[in-house]
Amino acid sequence: MTHSLKTIAIDAALCLSSALLLAMPWWGVTSLTLLVALVPLLSVQRRHRGRRFWIAAMSTFALFNLLSVSWVAKAAVIGAIAATVAYTLYFGAVAALYNAVWKRAPKSLAYTLLVSCWVAAERLYLNGEISFPWLNLGGGLALDHTLVQWYEYTGSLGGTLWVLIVNLLLFEAVSKTVGDRRFVISRWIAPALWVAVPMIWSLAIYASYDEGDEKVTVAMLQPNVDPYKDKFGGMTQNAQLDRLVDMVRRAPVGSRFIVAPETALDDNFWIGSIEGTHMADTLRRTLVETHPGASVILGINAFRGYHKMLYDAPPTTTARTLPGRDYWWDAYNSALCIDTTDILQLYHKSKLVIGVEMIPYHEYFAFLNSLSVDLGGISGVLATQEESACFDNRGLDAGCAICYESVYGEYFASFVSKGAKVMFVITNDGWWGDTPGYRQHLRFSKLRAIETRRSIGRSANTGISALINERGDITAHTEWDEERILSGELTLNDSMTLFTRYGDITGRASTGVFLLSLLYFFAYRRRKKDYIVQ
Image (tube, rainbow, N blue to C red):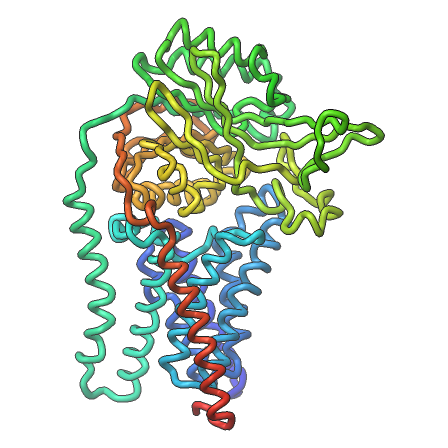
């Protein structure tokens, strides 16, 4: 093997090692590999003085995505490709910026910029229109949730910050040990402390946390309707309603909330006319007969119509116009709360799945609407509520995040800031089949429980329905491809965590540090135009 081929082989092995270590948490192996995952990739940079680092980083990130979220292709191949391309370009740009600074400025400045830029990029990936934060590093720590109980202060981006700092400290310790074997122990003190102290602190929080005594009885319904064969065509709406009503009847006596999954009923429900429909009347009558004090929460497709003669405003950017008519309408992915009163409560999903429920910058690229992936029900560009809202049951407020919203920590916490004492997640994970996708989705809810210190009831059409306590423990769950009523008690909490009260402080602070570091770098280069770090 020639020298060049050997070099390429070593670089490829290092990139593969980083990709595998990054992917292991999403495979369900362990989260701890994240603490060393970037060390092999950083070794490529040091081996070639940065000349091949950008290519190595792009290759690593692309492989990491393919290894972790290739299950998306089961429902939409284009979705898996788009997610991989977006992440690779996005964080490849972070790597390129870091590499450019590393070659031209002190190493300390380059490291500061890498960490702050990466965390700021994850925050932007959470809040921008092009958003698929499934692989944010802090989210990968969900597998070992007992080690990140301090998320109630920092949110999941605090985990990303921890992962990056530990990787850099370990890389420096390894590099110095290889180059000089003197004072080996002293070089490992800092990385050892950065690994151990947050873990010990977290375990102490976990062991001492008291959930309180106030509880509520809930029932999570898992109808197990196949989304490909039955949900959107093979099974009539009346048959699906009959199954739902039967499960409501069989829910344990004393249940205060009976929760059905996202798009539990795929019928045409027009806002303003839902009251009096066969569905509403049937569910209300069932509650009167079997659970008079309970509320049923279920996912529906809701629509709002506008007539130009009666609505003195231009169409919304998400509105669909009926050809040749003075009428347009918006579609929503919604959660409906029904009880024995005459009041219906409605919440519309606000964090939408890119490429299925929304097109980024739709006001400029409306012509791309036809490219939306059809996963049954209403696809294309949906309207949103823009902010969270709670459902009330006799003075008890509960929040209900719809599917993808459970990935967004700061948005999820907004339900709690509006008064939710308990949280629900409704989803339809059947699209991904028996793949890692639905298991990954469930683990994100563990982090949301820690960040907000709210118990969570999760209702999945199929996948895993679960009960999660305030420490992030899954106390009960269903299995894949199982029709079941999962019942139990969830604790109630009205206290506010630091993360809930002040939001994503870690992300905002990192963004500020990144901008200051970038300004300092430009000022530094202006003073020393010809200086290059060798």
